[in-house]
Length: 146
Image 1 (spheres, rainbow, N blue to C red):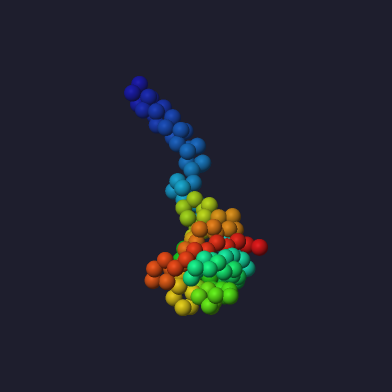
Image 2 (cartoon, helix red, strand yellow):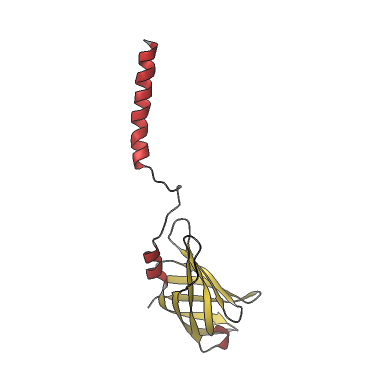
């Protein structure tokens, strides 16, 4: 009798576990992935924006391409050109876009050839609260995909 209940209990647990195993994801909760094609579509190409730097608001254009260097897992390395009327926002750039844990934002980290860095979070083809650093905070910027 005891063996019978033990076998029935084991079978019952196995049956309860199968749907859980069949439906469970191999990713941790909150860990989502973004395909490389989706990332490229969201990042590469032309961006328009404006920056507040040196006390003035300056429009700029940023054109990004995929870098030939290997990206960290989940990130997309980029190179490009930043063009504006202000010489502080002109030059070649390099850096990376990385998805955050819930893939609602792409984190931007770009370096301008003169050493300044641009950072922020892109959501739905818009970056609205970016920061410019030059050894210390030097300004802010926003940009969007036209």
